[in-house]
Length: 119
Image 1 (tube, helix red, strand yellow):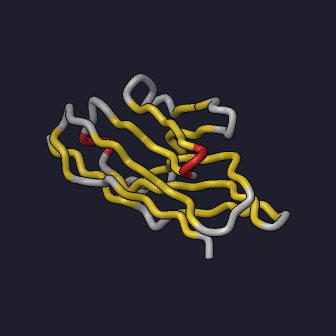
Image 2 (image 1 turned 30 degrees about the vertical axis):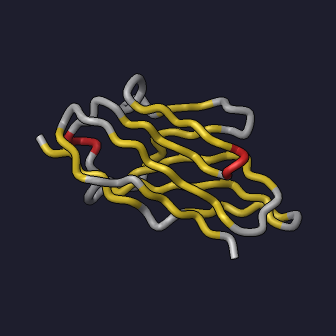
């Protein structure tokens, strides 16, 4: 069974840092796209950062210069380093990955991890 599991969410003061991790486990062939999205209370989920298999990264304007996405292909893991956190970054953060499994490509999501930034 293929699983996507996030970790690293926590309560942090404004200006602080957190690092989120997400690992895809199970019998898979490859992973191309990996991304982090967040859902603020009462709002739609939004993509904040993504990274392709070759390492090309993209960021939402709201997090550019503060968040850094990276991945370890050997571990099927993606990270989100979040610096200079603001109260408006408070959200549930979700990891997603486009995973190739036995010839098919599946868009898989984790269960989410809560990030709370206090002012």
